[in-house]
Length: 221
Image (cartoon, rainbow, N blue to C red; front, side, top):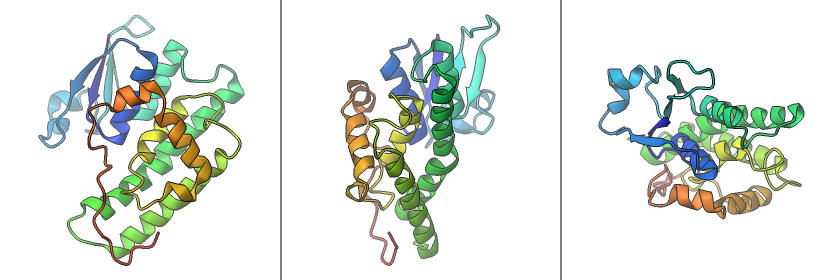
């Protein structure tokens, strides 16, 4: 059995998408971020960074003690390799998928998170920060749009690369982006959204950093 420590943030939704797609047995352990449960000693023993999601595999492949892990990208890669799913089987294909997984972890996620924070959640308007992060997210959307010009999914077939990126495109309005300006990205987004597993994963989820942002006068797109 696998325990998924979860809250419906974009990073948390990656794992929910993975399990919805694969239907692997698992147990969801809700983590109240507003209640500060991610800072408790019990949770920190699993996720030293105090962030969700976190995972405990009670039946690791080596047959040893339960294996705890943090960082959503590492979890996706671990699960995909262990179960032989959602990752190309040839070395070149796997490398491409892993590159885009790392791209999301290092670029799209952090920059989109900052854009969403300064556009939607910050207690005061900081025009420089709004401008800087909105522009960078626009650039990253452009990178993904170019990758998708002549393909249905990011790295060959549907993979952990798509699963990692999709939840960070869901709140594009809060990032100050219009998907109509990125036609290939928009087609991909609609294609992924139409998957039955994706619809199941998002059923009942009402806030994934997707709330409309407040007006941000002077913020560059």
